[in-house]
Image (cartoon, rainbow, N blue to C red; front, side):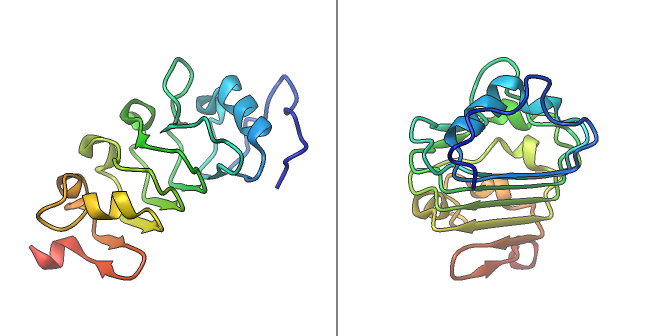
Length: 165
């Protein structure tokens, strides 16, 4: 909840930072993305709230230095009112990512490519109606990207794809 913080120090965050949560801080979010998310080399847990980030349509945003740190094991993305898609390139080196939670992103329609989600053990999707529709078993365009994940939870139901196949 750092809405008044404009940016963080130019040298960035400490290299041994293992967990980071930013919410209600659009200027802080912009500053972090420009500095380079990939520079958080020890970060395992990342929680990003997009309150006030109405210009953000992809996560991570496309461009040089927009890759997520390969050390991540858990990501929570929430409250991005105009987020439409997840940028596969940003997820490219996340071989240890076990948990992905996405909530309150009403315009989100797609996940990263399946190859970027192979290590996922848990996927939680809440209040993202277009994405949930796209992840419908068998008929959704996103189903093939999540069918391998052992535990998938939507707003009102839990789906365990491997048990259903």
